[in-house]
Length: 497
Ligand code: BG6
Image (cartoon, rainbow, N blue to C red; front, side, top):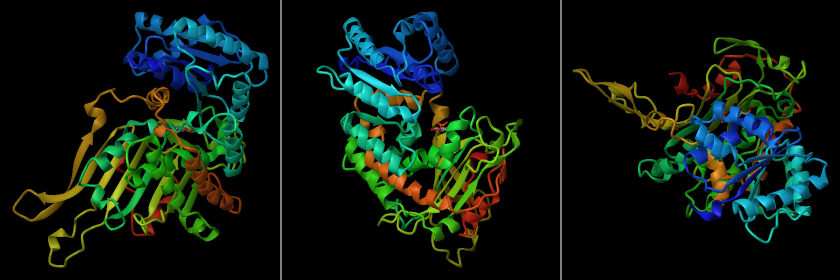
């Protein structure tokens, strides 16, 4: 095992939901698969009082519930002995940082981690800057030995302006190469696979442009509502919770030019060009090309679901969007004129994230009457819950008549590699300690994605809503279907097929 990886995960927000559901189970899985060196250590920081033992017991429950591997006593013992809990108020207790540093240095000596620290900010965004300032003023991000990196959860800012200020302030404290801004979608197996499918097959890349592709669709449907995050969601809405990050990141992977190599900067250079070419919305284009929604009560997965406005910490008059559908364009040579349809919603009728590349049909030729029924070639990338992809083509139906039928060449990755796909956070944590920043967003990517979001948000302020406008457990507002049908196209609901 690479000694360079021996490090301490320092988690701010150690008692939070993300740590329990994702981070600790992910680190456990990495250990289970022997991807971590013997001497890694976890130091969690929280504002609640707890002993190491109490904290370890809590984490035991998390790993049991959320890890993809099952626990056994021996493994748990080995893992839990590497977890430590420090209780201090990281928002105000300056002395606490000094103590923490001393503690981490003791850990370095004991576990030979040599000053290598991954600080993970799993806290509300308003604390990012303060924590980084405190780390800096206590000499905790520029140690003479090892390396110190900072992983920042989303959202990075709440608007173009606040993101710029935050970035300006933290870039004075730590160099860009040590900032790892998370978009957990970049850690998903199938998002990584986009690069392999696009650049590893002679079949697709020559056709991957406006000459052959009719449109691109990105869909993210969730069954979940806002759970216990009403307070956060009220300010974020679907626009900042999903579109600004996950959905646009998926689009960059689909639409970018082939990078010169697979180095992080080469990939990010190409991704940012896509974001720069995204057509911004104006008052006129907004009206025609965006549909917004908020769920009312309904039934999801056989259970009653309350309306968004009745969720905990949500205003009964809230105008926050829980659904969006839009049509946009990437104004560059490759994609000029190809509509990009994106839709995402909470409390939908199915859980599925997929990307559909719809190819143009061959020119219709009158005397090929039997070919009237041919369907579009589709390449469908199934991101989750099922992982894989299929290619839809036309073939002759066996029999004496010359009839055509659609055939789906289907690759179910999750059937082939049962439980083998690492969780996004596993990959992200590992790549951060390996110093591979290609799975993290660079500042200019964020800046351009915020510009796009701002062009939408500016128009949001001027439009009226009659919410709720779709029932929980459905496919969203009817207008989202009209949005694409008026172009003579349709949403491909392949997850429901
Ligand atoms: C998070 C959002 O970033 O992504 C959540 O804050 C959303 O609201 C989640 O549910 C979706 O992630 P996944 O991995 O379940 O598709």
